[in-house]
Length: 387
Image 1 (cartoon, rainbow, N blue to C red):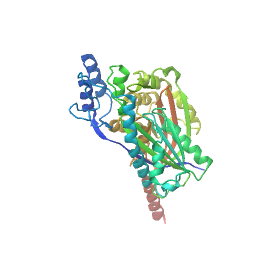
Image 2: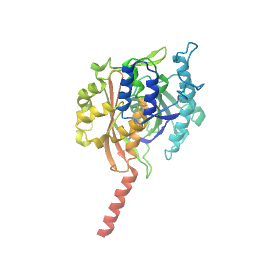
Image 3: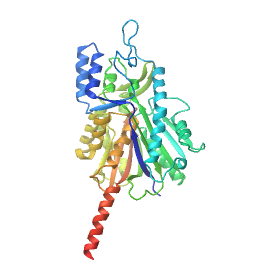
Image 4: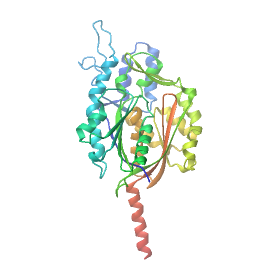
């Protein structure tokens, strides 16, 4: 029995700002010239063209300025409670709209068919949460099971998909909605720590949803067959990536050594997931690498001796959206599936990284409807000519 990702839908809230604009604003908030130069370099070398944010304004003349000036003329940073209120206000309609879109884009699957809703986020909390409002506003059964994977970080889509696969294997009638909702930009901070400056140059807002079930895909439908998942820890990087709750938003520890640590360990990390299908590196057509930053993708390519064409989707998502934490890998997988030049059937190895340093991986088989249709048409012509 196969378990399928029937569809992946994505959505970006708020508005897009160019990376050049973000760099200029950040430099205007920093007094030290050495740090301003650091910011310019970080943003120029980020591999990002633009990012989305729910923050309404960074303009000090606007009443919606995210860093308003206090009575003393100093910029005030929002408290964690104020930031979480933005999360609560913005994610409720976003979750409902994205769930509706995911169902509309999944042939033959209706709201009443959904048996499980899994929400994934590390950028905010409230309860009743997005899962509740998805069920209520889309008319799903009150008995729909709800699960929330919280505060795991950029790799959390993998536990969500793995959980969905296990639900479907236990109950072949299950239809699971997995949704990653991340508003990273609300944790933007003005401190001059290297970790914060680096994080400020990378993170963005985005949401993605996948419909998972054992139902055979309909004719003309592109999808993924889910394979094996694997998780491992690179404990030498425990202090280099961490995520905690502070008084002025969530505090991140993000060392510039993370790409080197991943590069030094990724070949060993992927061996078990490849061995689960008796694969070697050459059996994988495309690599869905979580683009936590340009240097991370660079190090994976270098360490595994990959062709640049095998990570095109990862680089494109980074360039157009930035790092949207757990939602990012679903954006990458969606782009890979929609690729016009891709083979009808292709093995994809996906991976993402997070606090700990945690590495989550999964094997998927991409089945592209357009390419399958093209191959069938060629076969029909050959058969006709032969007869």
